[in-house]
Image (cartoon, rainbow over all chains, first blue to last red; front, side, top):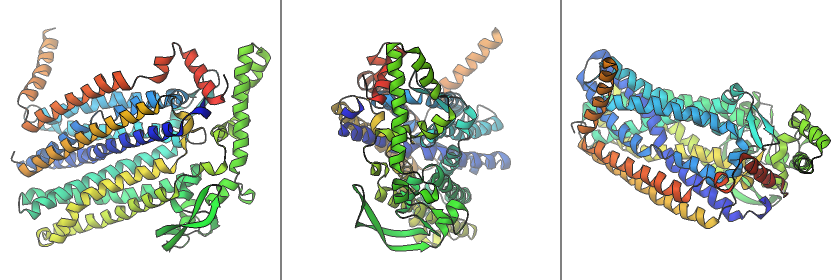
Length: 518
Length: 75
């Protein structure tokens, strides 16, 4: 029974999934971005015939290969965890998760593995244009793989295009189009992939800066900085734009997450965006959740209202509105959603009982409810709320989402400045004269990973307590297995992934030190 | 038939030559890939990550009943 699930099991399962996802995401964005940078560099080589560009391409391709090879298959562990630790969830999502992941698997296998081999083994064995096409296909294939993963992930945040089957307890896809064109999926794909481009651009800029600091490989470094600077700048601006669009979507489909990101407790019109601030505990509470005051804040007036409603005077609901309800603004209270969810759950219970005792009339009438739009839109959509005991349980960790979001955004704008300076100094051939800039570029490599991981922390911590928004809380999704088993595998993963990361960094460092000649 | 055999041979030789002339880092990452896949599939998958519903129930009907029981809180 769900009521008997040990909370430590839920938390250990969450910790294990978070650990795996965080490590997996250390490898993925560099693959996404560096593959395009390679494609640009090789395109210049094929177009100009300049052997220097071939040398530059091959050097960065080596680093791409190390990262790709060590990161490959780390995502498979996440799929294992679904089946073992999150079996209720895996069953409940039915084919909706399976279909995009199957497409991803086929694409990854055929596009990436085939053409990655041509990229590495095909120099001087296949034609220049065929080799270039392979490099482009690897880049496009990597992003397409990400698309399907992100489509599946987005469905969890905004479940659309499905109908619940009360006989099997599974959701069945009734519109592949709605699942793929889910607004959350579109925003998440564009935002995530472009953030990977930024990460790779910072990586190339940082490593190139290291060469310049050591007075080595200067031509390679300068040319690489130009490509990475332009690609990074365009990508960073795209990240900012897609982030803005994503915020608007989140405000609509996950308003609690949005309010938590802003630490907005009391809804208001003409709401300003907090650029910087420090959270302090106040005496106020929502149930057992502390209310935080935002001190030392710098705000941009009305921007939050404009971002969410398109108007400076627009009303942005706060956490108190969203938990307690605000009839004036048409916001249901969580208590009301819990009641509606409990009704939906009771219908499912009655349906199951009617089937067991062979009451065909009740089976027919209760079963029909799961097809009725009124029941789906006004009751079943709140199914997950039935598992809560208190309304305040729908509030995620405000400090984690608030600070992670600001780290991500601040670093995002810092990278825009970094790329502008990189292009400026490169075009004036003054990169070596600004050693401070070269050091900042090098230090930016860990910072860009921090920004990238912070983005996922905002997404995944901000949507707590849901594994599927409004339909299934995390605590219900977990398998009834022993906490000890999860703790053991948590430690195994920590050791395995740390070993892989050390191998990745050490092999890459050695290759960087060797430089392009080796 | 000869054409297919020739294509297959070229395909095989492409990979064979690629692996044979691989650089030091290539050989090293392949060793890591093999060790990693062995750990993932032969240790983690076999001993720690059996599919909970598939290993505890024999049919989809039983799995459905179990999950419904979990969702409704009723046996």
